Length: 550
Image (cartoon, helix red, strand yellow):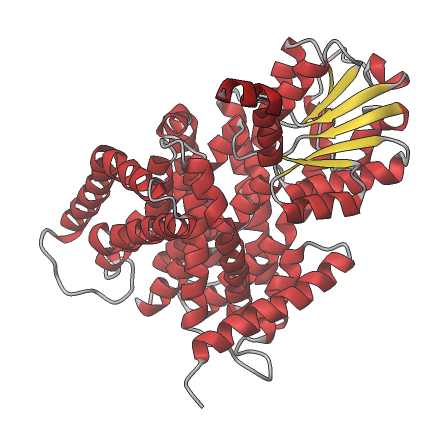
Protein backbone atom coordinates (compact mmCIF):
# COMPACT_ATOMS: atom_id res chain seq x y z
CA UNK A 1 0.00 0.00 0.00
CA UNK A 2 1.26 3.47 -0.84
CA UNK A 3 2.23 5.83 1.95
CA UNK A 4 -0.94 7.88 2.30
CA UNK A 5 -0.60 9.69 5.64
CA UNK A 6 -1.68 12.99 4.06
CA UNK A 7 -4.87 11.49 2.60
CA UNK A 8 -5.58 9.55 5.79
CA UNK A 9 -5.16 12.68 7.93
CA UNK A 10 -7.49 14.74 5.74
CA UNK A 11 -10.12 11.98 5.50
CA UNK A 12 -10.03 11.18 9.22
CA UNK A 13 -10.04 14.85 10.22
CA UNK A 14 -12.84 16.04 7.95
CA UNK A 15 -14.88 12.83 8.28
CA UNK A 16 -14.91 12.73 12.07
CA UNK A 17 -15.32 16.52 12.25
CA UNK A 18 -18.45 16.21 10.11
CA UNK A 19 -19.88 13.40 12.26
CA UNK A 20 -19.22 15.00 15.63
CA UNK A 21 -20.04 18.48 14.34
CA UNK A 22 -23.45 17.20 13.23
CA UNK A 23 -23.99 15.57 16.62
CA UNK A 24 -23.01 18.78 18.40
CA UNK A 25 -25.38 20.78 16.22
CA UNK A 26 -28.15 18.28 16.96
CA UNK A 27 -27.53 18.75 20.69
CA UNK A 28 -27.67 22.55 20.26
CA UNK A 29 -23.95 22.85 21.02
CA UNK A 30 -21.40 24.87 18.99
CA UNK A 31 -20.10 22.76 16.10
CA UNK A 32 -16.58 23.63 17.25
CA UNK A 33 -17.13 21.21 20.13
CA UNK A 34 -17.53 18.41 17.61
CA UNK A 35 -14.44 19.47 15.65
CA UNK A 36 -12.29 19.54 18.79
CA UNK A 37 -13.61 16.17 19.95
CA UNK A 38 -12.75 14.71 16.54
CA UNK A 39 -9.18 15.90 17.05
CA UNK A 40 -8.97 14.33 20.51
CA UNK A 41 -10.13 11.00 19.07
CA UNK A 42 -7.47 10.92 16.32
CA UNK A 43 -4.80 12.31 18.66
CA UNK A 44 -2.02 10.35 20.37
CA UNK A 45 -3.63 10.42 23.83
CA UNK A 46 -6.62 8.24 22.93
CA UNK A 47 -6.65 4.64 21.67
CA UNK A 48 -7.16 3.76 18.01
CA UNK A 49 -6.05 5.54 14.85
CA UNK A 50 -3.55 8.39 15.33
CA UNK A 51 -3.35 11.04 12.59
CA UNK A 52 -0.01 12.42 11.43
CA UNK A 53 0.94 15.02 14.04
CA UNK A 54 3.25 16.88 11.67
CA UNK A 55 0.86 17.11 8.73
CA UNK A 56 -2.27 18.17 10.65
CA UNK A 57 -0.82 21.48 11.97
CA UNK A 58 0.48 22.32 8.49
CA UNK A 59 -2.95 21.71 6.98
CA UNK A 60 -4.44 23.86 9.72
CA UNK A 61 -1.96 26.63 8.92
CA UNK A 62 -3.34 26.75 5.37
CA UNK A 63 -6.76 27.43 6.90
CA UNK A 64 -5.32 30.28 8.95
CA UNK A 65 -3.68 31.73 5.81
CA UNK A 66 -6.90 31.60 3.78
CA UNK A 67 -8.96 33.00 6.65
CA UNK A 68 -6.65 35.96 7.20
CA UNK A 69 -6.49 36.51 3.44
CA UNK A 70 -10.30 36.70 3.40
CA UNK A 71 -10.29 39.21 6.25
CA UNK A 72 -7.73 41.31 4.43
CA UNK A 73 -10.03 41.41 1.41
CA UNK A 74 -12.59 43.24 3.56
CA UNK A 75 -10.10 45.36 5.53
CA UNK A 76 -8.43 48.27 3.77
CA UNK A 77 -5.31 50.18 4.75
CA UNK A 78 -7.62 53.05 5.66
CA UNK A 79 -9.52 50.82 8.08
CA UNK A 80 -6.30 49.68 9.71
CA UNK A 81 -5.03 53.22 10.17
CA UNK A 82 -8.42 54.34 11.51
CA UNK A 83 -8.19 51.99 14.52
CA UNK A 84 -4.46 52.30 15.21
CA UNK A 85 -4.95 54.76 18.09
CA UNK A 86 -6.87 52.18 20.11
CA UNK A 87 -5.58 48.89 18.65
CA UNK A 88 -1.86 49.55 19.23
CA UNK A 89 -1.89 50.83 22.84
CA UNK A 90 -4.86 48.62 23.73
CA UNK A 91 -3.20 45.41 22.55
CA UNK A 92 0.12 46.39 24.14
CA UNK A 93 -1.44 47.03 27.56
CA UNK A 94 -3.60 43.90 27.37
CA UNK A 95 -0.56 41.74 26.50
CA UNK A 96 1.35 43.25 29.44
CA UNK A 97 -1.52 42.62 31.87
CA UNK A 98 -2.08 39.03 30.72
CA UNK A 99 1.66 38.32 30.82
CA UNK A 100 1.86 39.67 34.37
CA UNK A 101 -1.00 37.40 35.44
CA UNK A 102 0.75 34.45 33.80
CA UNK A 103 3.99 35.27 35.65
CA UNK A 104 2.03 35.40 38.91
CA UNK A 105 0.50 31.96 38.37
CA UNK A 106 3.86 30.55 37.30
CA UNK A 107 5.51 31.78 40.49
CA UNK A 108 2.76 30.09 42.53
CA UNK A 109 3.55 26.85 40.68
CA UNK A 110 7.26 27.23 41.47
CA UNK A 111 8.43 28.04 37.94
CA UNK A 112 11.20 30.45 36.97
CA UNK A 113 10.66 34.00 35.75
CA UNK A 114 11.51 32.95 32.19
CA UNK A 115 8.87 30.21 32.31
CA UNK A 116 6.35 32.72 33.63
CA UNK A 117 7.05 35.18 30.80
CA UNK A 118 6.63 32.51 28.12
CA UNK A 119 3.50 31.21 29.86
CA UNK A 120 2.00 34.70 30.18
CA UNK A 121 2.75 35.63 26.58
CA UNK A 122 1.08 32.43 25.39
CA UNK A 123 -2.06 33.32 27.36
CA UNK A 124 -2.13 36.90 26.05
CA UNK A 125 -2.70 36.30 22.32
CA UNK A 126 -6.07 35.31 20.85
CA UNK A 127 -6.67 32.74 18.14
CA UNK A 128 -7.05 34.17 14.66
CA UNK A 129 -9.48 31.48 13.53
CA UNK A 130 -11.75 31.58 16.58
CA UNK A 131 -11.95 35.37 16.68
CA UNK A 132 -12.66 35.82 13.00
CA UNK A 133 -15.20 33.00 12.85
CA UNK A 134 -17.14 34.58 15.74
CA UNK A 135 -17.10 37.99 14.05
CA UNK A 136 -18.09 36.58 10.66
CA UNK A 137 -21.03 34.64 12.08
CA UNK A 138 -22.41 37.91 13.45
CA UNK A 139 -21.52 40.00 10.38
CA UNK A 140 -19.25 42.22 12.50
CA UNK A 141 -16.12 42.22 10.32
CA UNK A 142 -17.14 45.41 8.49
CA UNK A 143 -18.33 47.23 11.63
CA UNK A 144 -16.43 49.58 13.91
CA UNK A 145 -16.27 46.83 16.55
CA UNK A 146 -15.00 44.31 14.02
CA UNK A 147 -12.31 46.62 12.65
CA UNK A 148 -11.00 47.34 16.14
CA UNK A 149 -10.96 43.63 16.98
CA UNK A 150 -9.10 42.75 13.77
CA UNK A 151 -6.65 45.63 14.23
CA UNK A 152 -6.08 44.49 17.82
CA UNK A 153 -5.41 40.99 16.51
CA UNK A 154 -2.85 42.25 13.98
CA UNK A 155 -0.97 44.11 16.71
CA UNK A 156 -0.95 40.96 18.84
CA UNK A 157 0.41 38.96 15.91
CA UNK A 158 3.20 41.49 15.37
CA UNK A 159 4.07 41.37 19.08
CA UNK A 160 4.23 37.57 18.99
CA UNK A 161 6.49 37.67 15.92
CA UNK A 162 8.90 39.83 17.92
CA UNK A 163 8.63 37.47 20.90
CA UNK A 164 9.40 34.41 18.78
CA UNK A 165 12.56 36.06 17.44
CA UNK A 166 13.76 37.56 20.73
CA UNK A 167 13.12 34.59 23.03
CA UNK A 168 16.04 32.51 21.70
CA UNK A 169 18.36 35.49 22.12
CA UNK A 170 17.11 36.13 25.68
CA UNK A 171 16.91 32.46 26.69
CA UNK A 172 20.19 32.39 28.58
CA UNK A 173 19.31 35.51 30.58
CA UNK A 174 15.89 34.06 31.50
CA UNK A 175 17.20 30.71 32.75
CA UNK A 176 16.98 28.60 29.61
CA UNK A 177 19.52 27.33 27.13
CA UNK A 178 21.86 30.06 25.89
CA UNK A 179 22.03 30.20 22.07
CA UNK A 180 25.26 30.65 20.14
CA UNK A 181 26.34 34.31 20.25
CA UNK A 182 25.06 36.30 17.29
CA UNK A 183 26.05 39.68 15.82
CA UNK A 184 24.98 42.51 18.07
CA UNK A 185 23.46 40.30 20.79
CA UNK A 186 19.89 41.03 21.89
CA UNK A 187 19.92 44.57 20.53
CA UNK A 188 21.09 43.29 17.17
CA UNK A 189 18.40 40.61 17.04
CA UNK A 190 15.74 43.18 17.90
CA UNK A 191 16.97 45.62 15.27
CA UNK A 192 17.06 42.90 12.61
CA UNK A 193 13.52 41.81 13.45
CA UNK A 194 12.14 45.35 13.34
CA UNK A 195 13.97 45.96 10.08
CA UNK A 196 12.53 42.81 8.46
CA UNK A 197 8.96 43.59 9.49
CA UNK A 198 9.31 47.21 8.33
CA UNK A 199 10.78 46.06 5.00
CA UNK A 200 7.90 43.65 4.49
CA UNK A 201 5.27 46.32 5.20
CA UNK A 202 6.97 48.83 2.90
CA UNK A 203 7.30 46.33 0.05
CA UNK A 204 3.65 45.29 0.34
CA UNK A 205 2.37 48.87 0.50
CA UNK A 206 4.61 50.22 -2.26
CA UNK A 207 5.24 47.33 -4.63
CA UNK A 208 2.38 44.99 -3.72
CA UNK A 209 -0.28 47.69 -4.23
CA UNK A 210 0.78 47.95 -7.86
CA UNK A 211 1.71 44.37 -8.69
CA UNK A 212 -1.05 42.30 -7.01
CA UNK A 213 -4.08 44.18 -8.48
CA UNK A 214 -2.35 44.23 -11.89
CA UNK A 215 -1.85 40.45 -11.81
CA UNK A 216 -5.46 39.94 -10.70
CA UNK A 217 -6.82 42.02 -13.57
CA UNK A 218 -4.63 40.26 -16.13
CA UNK A 219 -5.92 36.90 -14.94
CA UNK A 220 -9.53 38.11 -15.01
CA UNK A 221 -9.12 39.23 -18.62
CA UNK A 222 -8.40 35.65 -19.65
CA UNK A 223 -12.06 34.88 -18.95
CA UNK A 224 -11.17 31.62 -17.16
CA UNK A 225 -12.81 31.28 -13.76
CA UNK A 226 -10.60 28.30 -12.97
CA UNK A 227 -7.45 30.27 -13.71
CA UNK A 228 -8.74 33.23 -11.68
CA UNK A 229 -9.38 30.98 -8.67
CA UNK A 230 -5.93 29.44 -9.01
CA UNK A 231 -4.32 32.87 -9.29
CA UNK A 232 -6.03 34.13 -6.14
CA UNK A 233 -4.90 31.08 -4.16
CA UNK A 234 -1.36 31.35 -5.55
CA UNK A 235 -1.13 34.99 -4.48
CA UNK A 236 -2.53 34.31 -0.99
CA UNK A 237 -0.34 31.29 -0.26
CA UNK A 238 2.70 32.66 -2.09
CA UNK A 239 2.76 35.98 -0.23
CA UNK A 240 2.13 34.22 3.09
CA UNK A 241 4.98 31.76 2.55
CA UNK A 242 7.32 34.40 1.14
CA UNK A 243 6.69 36.77 4.04
CA UNK A 244 7.57 34.02 6.54
CA UNK A 245 10.61 32.73 4.63
CA UNK A 246 12.14 36.09 3.71
CA UNK A 247 11.01 38.46 6.46
CA UNK A 248 10.27 36.22 9.43
CA UNK A 249 6.67 37.41 9.90
CA UNK A 250 3.84 34.96 10.43
CA UNK A 251 1.94 33.22 7.62
CA UNK A 252 -1.25 34.83 8.90
CA UNK A 253 0.17 38.35 8.83
CA UNK A 254 1.53 37.91 5.32
CA UNK A 255 -1.80 36.58 4.06
CA UNK A 256 -3.64 39.46 5.72
CA UNK A 257 -1.52 42.03 3.91
CA UNK A 258 -1.97 40.19 0.60
CA UNK A 259 -5.75 40.34 1.04
CA UNK A 260 -5.68 43.96 2.17
CA UNK A 261 -3.73 44.96 -0.94
CA UNK A 262 -6.05 42.94 -3.19
CA UNK A 263 -9.03 44.66 -1.55
CA UNK A 264 -8.20 47.78 -3.56
CA UNK A 265 -9.24 45.95 -6.73
CA UNK A 266 -12.87 45.81 -7.83
CA UNK A 267 -12.38 42.05 -8.19
CA UNK A 268 -11.90 41.60 -4.43
CA UNK A 269 -15.43 40.31 -3.81
CA UNK A 270 -15.03 37.65 -6.49
CA UNK A 271 -11.68 36.68 -4.98
CA UNK A 272 -13.32 36.31 -1.57
CA UNK A 273 -16.07 34.10 -2.98
CA UNK A 274 -13.57 31.85 -4.79
CA UNK A 275 -11.53 31.16 -1.63
CA UNK A 276 -14.52 30.60 0.69
CA UNK A 277 -14.95 26.80 0.32
CA UNK A 278 -11.27 26.01 0.85
CA UNK A 279 -11.10 28.44 3.76
CA UNK A 280 -13.95 26.73 5.58
CA UNK A 281 -12.58 23.23 4.98
CA UNK A 282 -9.09 24.01 6.24
CA UNK A 283 -10.45 26.03 9.17
CA UNK A 284 -12.12 22.81 10.33
CA UNK A 285 -8.75 21.04 10.16
CA UNK A 286 -7.35 23.78 12.40
CA UNK A 287 -9.75 22.86 15.20
CA UNK A 288 -9.08 19.16 14.65
CA UNK A 289 -5.34 19.79 14.97
CA UNK A 290 -5.91 21.58 18.29
CA UNK A 291 -7.87 18.61 19.58
CA UNK A 292 -5.00 16.29 18.60
CA UNK A 293 -2.63 18.17 20.90
CA UNK A 294 -4.84 17.89 23.96
CA UNK A 295 -4.06 15.35 26.70
CA UNK A 296 -7.34 14.94 28.67
CA UNK A 297 -5.51 13.54 31.70
CA UNK A 298 -4.19 17.02 32.55
CA UNK A 299 -7.69 17.84 33.80
CA UNK A 300 -7.27 15.15 36.46
CA UNK A 301 -3.58 15.78 37.20
CA UNK A 302 -3.74 19.57 37.58
CA UNK A 303 -7.38 20.65 38.01
CA UNK A 304 -6.64 23.82 40.02
CA UNK A 305 -3.87 24.95 37.69
CA UNK A 306 -6.12 24.36 34.67
CA UNK A 307 -8.91 26.37 36.31
CA UNK A 308 -6.52 29.22 37.11
CA UNK A 309 -5.18 29.22 33.54
CA UNK A 310 -8.70 29.34 32.13
CA UNK A 311 -9.60 32.17 34.50
CA UNK A 312 -6.69 34.26 33.24
CA UNK A 313 -7.75 33.72 29.61
CA UNK A 314 -11.51 34.14 29.95
CA UNK A 315 -11.84 36.52 32.90
CA UNK A 316 -8.58 38.33 33.52
CA UNK A 317 -7.66 39.10 29.92
CA UNK A 318 -11.25 40.02 29.02
CA UNK A 319 -11.65 42.39 31.96
CA UNK A 320 -8.38 44.08 31.05
CA UNK A 321 -9.53 44.57 27.45
CA UNK A 322 -12.94 45.84 28.64
CA UNK A 323 -11.37 48.47 30.91
CA UNK A 324 -8.89 49.51 28.22
CA UNK A 325 -11.59 50.04 25.58
CA UNK A 326 -13.77 52.04 27.99
CA UNK A 327 -10.72 54.13 28.93
CA UNK A 328 -10.55 55.16 25.27
CA UNK A 329 -14.17 56.37 25.62
CA UNK A 330 -15.59 53.77 23.26
CA UNK A 331 -19.17 52.48 23.68
CA UNK A 332 -20.02 49.46 25.80
CA UNK A 333 -20.90 47.52 22.65
CA UNK A 334 -17.29 47.86 21.46
CA UNK A 335 -15.83 47.03 24.88
CA UNK A 336 -17.96 43.92 25.31
CA UNK A 337 -17.30 42.69 21.76
CA UNK A 338 -13.53 43.08 22.14
CA UNK A 339 -13.64 41.37 25.55
CA UNK A 340 -15.55 38.36 24.21
CA UNK A 341 -13.36 38.19 21.08
CA UNK A 342 -10.14 37.96 23.10
CA UNK A 343 -11.40 35.43 25.67
CA UNK A 344 -9.55 32.51 24.07
CA UNK A 345 -6.11 31.51 22.83
CA UNK A 346 -4.88 29.51 19.85
CA UNK A 347 -2.20 29.01 17.26
CA UNK A 348 0.47 31.49 18.43
CA UNK A 349 0.08 30.14 21.97
CA UNK A 350 1.03 26.65 20.78
CA UNK A 351 4.04 27.97 18.86
CA UNK A 352 5.27 29.91 21.90
CA UNK A 353 4.74 26.92 24.17
CA UNK A 354 6.71 24.66 21.83
CA UNK A 355 9.55 27.17 21.58
CA UNK A 356 9.61 27.63 25.35
CA UNK A 357 9.90 23.89 25.95
CA UNK A 358 12.62 23.48 23.30
CA UNK A 359 14.65 26.29 24.94
CA UNK A 360 14.08 24.69 28.34
CA UNK A 361 12.42 27.87 29.53
CA UNK A 362 8.96 26.36 29.99
CA UNK A 363 8.39 23.00 31.72
CA UNK A 364 6.30 20.41 29.82
CA UNK A 365 3.52 20.92 32.38
CA UNK A 366 3.29 24.51 31.21
CA UNK A 367 2.63 23.39 27.65
CA UNK A 368 -0.10 21.04 28.88
CA UNK A 369 -1.76 23.89 30.80
CA UNK A 370 -1.61 26.15 27.73
CA UNK A 371 -3.21 23.47 25.55
CA UNK A 372 -5.90 22.79 28.16
CA UNK A 373 -6.59 26.50 28.45
CA UNK A 374 -6.84 26.80 24.67
CA UNK A 375 -9.28 23.90 24.31
CA UNK A 376 -11.50 25.01 27.18
CA UNK A 377 -11.49 28.68 26.18
CA UNK A 378 -12.40 27.81 22.60
CA UNK A 379 -15.31 25.76 23.95
CA UNK A 380 -16.41 28.60 26.25
CA UNK A 381 -16.03 31.40 23.69
CA UNK A 382 -19.21 30.68 21.67
CA UNK A 383 -21.16 30.66 24.95
CA UNK A 384 -19.78 34.11 25.81
CA UNK A 385 -20.91 35.43 22.44
CA UNK A 386 -24.34 33.84 22.94
CA UNK A 387 -24.69 35.70 26.24
CA UNK A 388 -23.41 38.87 24.56
CA UNK A 389 -26.05 38.53 21.81
CA UNK A 390 -28.76 38.53 24.47
CA UNK A 391 -27.34 41.22 26.77
CA UNK A 392 -25.94 43.73 24.28
CA UNK A 393 -29.20 45.06 22.79
CA UNK A 394 -30.45 45.99 26.28
CA UNK A 395 -27.18 47.68 27.22
CA UNK A 396 -26.77 49.78 24.08
CA UNK A 397 -30.43 50.59 23.44
CA UNK A 398 -31.09 54.30 23.08
CA UNK A 399 -32.86 56.02 25.91
CA UNK A 400 -36.47 56.85 25.14
CA UNK A 401 -36.67 54.50 22.15
CA UNK A 402 -40.01 52.67 22.14
CA UNK A 403 -40.03 48.95 22.87
CA UNK A 404 -41.34 48.24 19.37
CA UNK A 405 -41.93 50.33 16.25
CA UNK A 406 -45.36 51.82 15.70
CA UNK A 407 -45.67 49.90 12.43
CA UNK A 408 -45.32 46.58 14.25
CA UNK A 409 -48.91 46.76 15.50
CA UNK A 410 -50.44 46.83 12.00
CA UNK A 411 -49.85 45.14 8.62
CA UNK A 412 -46.39 46.05 7.39
CA UNK A 413 -43.19 44.67 5.85
CA UNK A 414 -40.02 43.60 7.65
CA UNK A 415 -36.61 44.02 6.02
CA UNK A 416 -33.57 42.17 7.39
CA UNK A 417 -30.25 43.76 6.49
CA UNK A 418 -29.47 47.31 5.37
CA UNK A 419 -26.42 46.74 3.17
CA UNK A 420 -26.33 47.64 -0.52
CA UNK A 421 -29.24 45.36 -1.43
CA UNK A 422 -31.27 46.09 1.67
CA UNK A 423 -30.87 49.83 1.29
CA UNK A 424 -32.12 49.69 -2.31
CA UNK A 425 -35.11 47.56 -1.26
CA UNK A 426 -35.96 49.95 1.56
CA UNK A 427 -35.88 52.98 -0.71
CA UNK A 428 -38.07 51.22 -3.26
CA UNK A 429 -40.65 50.29 -0.60
CA UNK A 430 -40.72 53.66 1.14
CA UNK A 431 -43.88 54.88 -0.60
CA UNK A 432 -45.48 51.44 -1.00
CA UNK A 433 -45.81 50.01 2.53
CA UNK A 434 -44.95 50.56 6.16
CA UNK A 435 -41.54 49.05 6.78
CA UNK A 436 -39.58 47.94 9.84
CA UNK A 437 -35.85 47.33 9.31
CA UNK A 438 -33.79 44.88 11.37
CA UNK A 439 -30.07 45.69 11.45
CA UNK A 440 -27.46 44.68 14.05
CA UNK A 441 -24.54 46.84 12.92
CA UNK A 442 -24.31 50.21 14.64
CA UNK A 443 -23.30 52.41 11.70
CA UNK A 444 -25.93 50.92 9.40
CA UNK A 445 -28.53 51.21 12.16
CA UNK A 446 -27.80 54.94 12.33
CA UNK A 447 -28.23 55.11 8.54
CA UNK A 448 -31.63 53.40 8.85
CA UNK A 449 -32.78 55.98 11.40
CA UNK A 450 -31.41 58.83 9.31
CA UNK A 451 -33.39 57.52 6.31
CA UNK A 452 -36.59 57.73 8.36
CA UNK A 453 -37.39 54.03 8.74
CA UNK A 454 -38.55 52.39 11.92
CA UNK A 455 -36.06 49.82 13.06
CA UNK A 456 -35.02 47.14 15.50
CA UNK A 457 -31.32 46.74 16.29
CA UNK A 458 -30.39 43.09 16.76
CA UNK A 459 -29.68 39.76 15.06
CA UNK A 460 -32.71 38.51 13.11
CA UNK A 461 -31.63 34.90 13.66
CA UNK A 462 -33.03 35.30 17.18
CA UNK A 463 -36.83 34.77 17.23
CA UNK A 464 -37.38 37.51 19.82
CA UNK A 465 -35.85 40.10 17.46
CA UNK A 466 -38.20 39.06 14.65
CA UNK A 467 -41.19 39.21 17.00
CA UNK A 468 -40.15 42.63 18.26
CA UNK A 469 -40.27 43.83 14.65
CA UNK A 470 -43.90 42.67 14.53
CA UNK A 471 -43.43 39.62 12.34
CA UNK A 472 -46.76 38.19 13.56
CA UNK A 473 -48.60 41.09 11.87
CA UNK A 474 -46.25 41.44 8.88
CA UNK A 475 -47.44 40.70 5.35
CA UNK A 476 -43.95 40.54 3.81
CA UNK A 477 -40.45 39.63 5.00
CA UNK A 478 -37.50 40.73 2.86
CA UNK A 479 -34.26 38.88 3.73
CA UNK A 480 -31.32 40.82 2.25
CA UNK A 481 -28.41 39.38 4.25
CA UNK A 482 -25.52 38.04 2.10
CA UNK A 483 -25.01 34.70 3.86
CA UNK A 484 -27.40 31.99 2.58
CA UNK A 485 -27.01 29.95 5.77
CA UNK A 486 -27.89 32.91 7.97
CA UNK A 487 -30.80 33.71 5.66
CA UNK A 488 -31.99 30.09 5.90
CA UNK A 489 -32.06 30.26 9.70
CA UNK A 490 -33.97 33.55 9.62
CA UNK A 491 -36.51 32.18 7.14
CA UNK A 492 -37.00 29.02 9.19
CA UNK A 493 -37.69 31.07 12.33
CA UNK A 494 -39.98 33.45 10.46
CA UNK A 495 -42.02 30.72 8.77
CA UNK A 496 -42.61 29.03 12.13
CA UNK A 497 -43.72 32.33 13.71
CA UNK A 498 -45.98 33.46 10.83
CA UNK A 499 -47.00 30.77 8.31
CA UNK A 500 -48.84 33.33 6.14
CA UNK A 501 -46.05 35.88 5.69
CA UNK A 502 -44.68 36.25 2.15
CA UNK A 503 -40.88 35.79 2.33
CA UNK A 504 -38.63 37.19 -0.41
CA UNK A 505 -34.94 36.35 -0.03
CA UNK A 506 -31.64 37.10 -1.68
CA UNK A 507 -29.61 34.20 -3.15
CA UNK A 508 -26.38 33.72 -5.06
CA UNK A 509 -26.65 30.25 -6.62
CA UNK A 510 -29.26 27.69 -7.62
CA UNK A 511 -28.29 25.69 -4.53
CA UNK A 512 -29.04 28.75 -2.38
CA UNK A 513 -32.47 29.00 -4.02
CA UNK A 514 -33.19 25.36 -3.20
CA UNK A 515 -32.04 25.80 0.42
CA UNK A 516 -34.01 29.00 1.05
CA UNK A 517 -37.14 27.64 -0.62
CA UNK A 518 -36.90 24.48 1.44
CA UNK A 519 -36.68 26.58 4.60
CA UNK A 520 -39.88 28.41 3.65
CA UNK A 521 -39.03 31.30 1.32
CA UNK A 522 -41.83 32.25 -1.06
CA UNK A 523 -39.33 33.59 -3.59
CA UNK A 524 -35.51 33.42 -3.68
CA UNK A 525 -33.95 35.75 -6.24
CA UNK A 526 -30.55 35.36 -7.91
CA UNK A 527 -28.80 38.55 -8.95
CA UNK A 528 -27.73 37.24 -12.36
CA UNK A 529 -31.32 36.30 -13.26
CA UNK A 530 -32.63 39.73 -12.30
CA UNK A 531 -29.91 41.42 -14.35
CA UNK A 532 -30.87 39.26 -17.34
CA UNK A 533 -34.54 40.21 -16.94
CA UNK A 534 -33.58 43.87 -16.79
CA UNK A 535 -31.51 43.58 -19.95
CA UNK A 536 -34.34 41.80 -21.78
CA UNK A 537 -36.80 44.48 -20.66
CA UNK A 538 -34.58 47.12 -22.23
CA UNK A 539 -33.99 45.15 -25.43
CA UNK A 540 -36.10 45.96 -28.53
CA UNK A 541 -39.21 43.91 -29.21
CA UNK A 542 -39.13 41.34 -32.00
CA UNK A 543 -41.24 43.42 -34.38
CA UNK A 544 -39.27 46.56 -33.71
CA UNK A 545 -36.03 44.71 -34.36
CA UNK A 546 -37.43 43.40 -37.68
CA UNK A 547 -38.44 46.89 -38.80
CA UNK A 548 -35.03 48.20 -37.92
CA UNK A 549 -33.49 45.45 -40.06
CA UNK A 550 -35.37 46.72 -43.10
